[in-house]
Image (cartoon, rainbow, N blue to C red):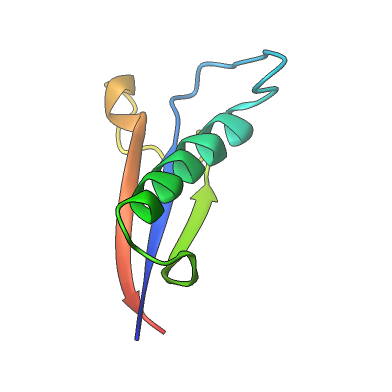
Amino acid sequence: NWVLQVDGHTDDKPINSALYPSNWELSSARAIAVVKFLHEQGIPYNRLVAAGYGEFQPLSTTDINRNRRIELKLTNR
């Protein structure tokens, strides 16, 4: 019994748009888009989780491109 968690991350540049008022909304939207894609490929929604972390879990303090990412984590329930 497994679950695939899709984690969205952003860099620390502030975003402020009507669609994405903050990096949290942007990172969540990225994760949700991947979950929808995976569901279209045949993975049931009850096996998928989307999470947005915004800019709060950076991989690098010098290379902001590395911080704009999606991470996939496969875990047992």
